[in-house]
Image (tube, rainbow, N blue to C red; front, side, top):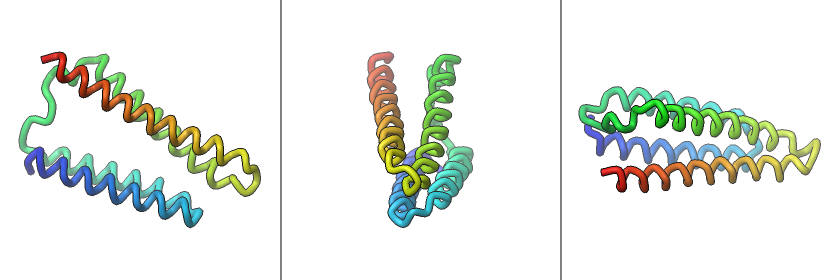
Length: 126
């Protein structure tokens, strides 16, 4: 598989997970999106191993870079799980909806900021 094919598959899986998660939240089913995210991650991991080509160079694998990526991933996973838990408890306490929404926006903001900074430093590093 080429890097281009992998990127197309990755975008399709992300779109499917987003649709699944949004529909599940609307229908107040909070287990399905967590399972969908886990399954999507596993599928992407499988396809990433099948890529024939260079997806990144050695700059991306420095200790600091790996630590930053791992931190973002752990923070995102934990925040999303807590967010779904809070959304599932909105009926018992309406203020949980605000906290869950705040967590969702913070995760989105941190991932967008990370992407922008990564692209910026990647361009200026060359």
